[in-house]
Length: 211
Image (cartoon, rainbow, N blue to C red):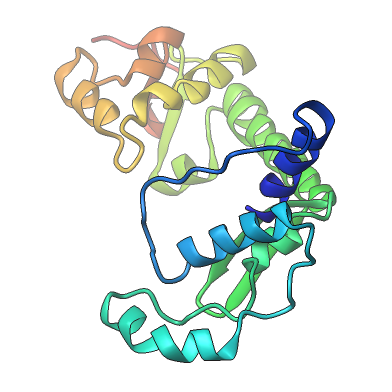
């Protein structure tokens, strides 16, 4: 909020002779958010520095009310820790849980994404495409095959895996996969129907699939 207010003030001085009007709406989290938000606006408009801490007297005055409405503890600083941390260009994402702050740097996030992509392509594309298995399928004793019972190939394996985007809807539970798995001929989810693949027992692999 402070950065936004200072940006508006800067633009106002460039294009409107320093005049700007601040309005507000909502009112959520009235003890922790609203006072600090308006304090930032006032400080920006008056070109005053942001204090390191919120006034102790203010925290003490409203602490009990905030606790009553589930908005405690009162914040010590004018900015949330993540707001301060995210000003560093190297920080990719930040989350605060209780009194602890967790963040990842951009380089680490890029590396994590590259590793995840390599894992996806290696396991669900190459291994499944050439051998018909993933670690989970090997554990359960099933195989992914094409219509002739052979290994599906990398393209089909990747296709059926990418379509978990559809099968996984609504994402908290793979409802589409469950419905199509139980209701379609051959008990196939959308990814298998699109890629023309089947999941069969390992003893049935190598034989043409009869539905």
